[in-house]
Every structure is written in structure tokens, then in C-alpha cells.
Image (cartoon, rainbow, N blue to C red; front, side, top):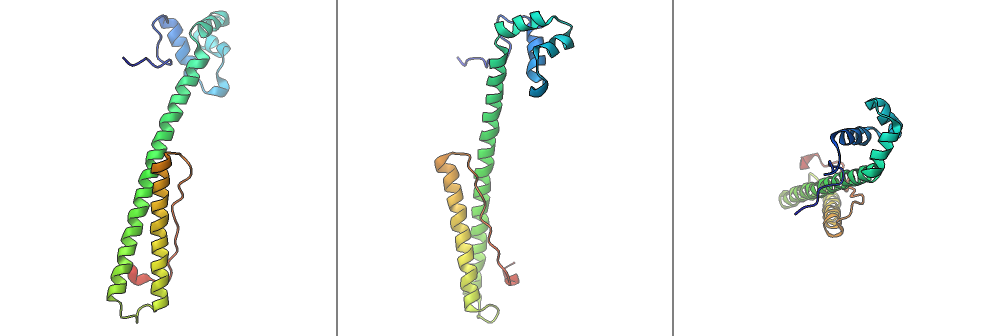
Length: 159
């Protein structure tokens, strides 16, 4: 059986104490205070403090914030992995275009040196995209996954 998250209503928490906790929990951190909850609900600060201590409001809000942060970081990791996959696919498509150009080129459109330079740029882009994806997958960390940026100039025929 899964344990209930601490920020949900506790079994021994009255409806009034629960409502007071939700006001406390949902108040932005800089404005959050027991006094403000008491004023908003028309309850004494002493009562609000007693509920806060008994039902561990501070820890419950910390638990909820940690859970929300974890979910956000997991979503970010998924987005970064997807971005790395997209970058790799873009690099593969560009490399395919360069391959096709090399196969069909009569070298009048592009000099050999230009073709080699473009191929090198695209292969580097592919390697960097693969490396970015590998870091996301292997390390499962949320470090910056910077997409490779390669500027290819003078190659309008690759479009």
C-alpha cells in the first residue's frame, strides 16, 4: 500500500485545520505566515500555531515543494533527452544531404575543399548530438545539454 503524501489531509486533521493548512500551503513563500492565515480565516494566531505544530505544516510544505521540484526536474530531463534525439536526427538528415551531394556532385557547384569542410561540420554536429544524448541517458543528470551549433555558409544547394 502506498503511503499518502504528507501534504494531503491527515487522518487526524479537522476540516478547519485542513482548510487553514491549505491557505498556508498555497500562500506564496514571502507572504506565508501563521499570522496572515489567522487574519484571513478570522482565527486566533494561537490556534493557527497549535494546528501548525500538531500537523507539521512547515515540513509538509517542504515535502510538497520537493515533490513538485522533482516532477519539474524529471520533465526537464525528458525534454532534454527529446531535444538531444531531435538534434541527432537533424544532424543525420544533414549528413544524408551531404552524402547525396557528394555522390551527385560534379564539383563545379562546390569545390572539393568546400565539400570536405561541410561534411566535417555535419559529422561533428552528428557526434556532438550523439554525445549530448549519451550524457542525458547514461548520467541521467540534469546538467546542461547544449545543442551543437554549426554554421554552414555558401551551401544553398543543400536546402
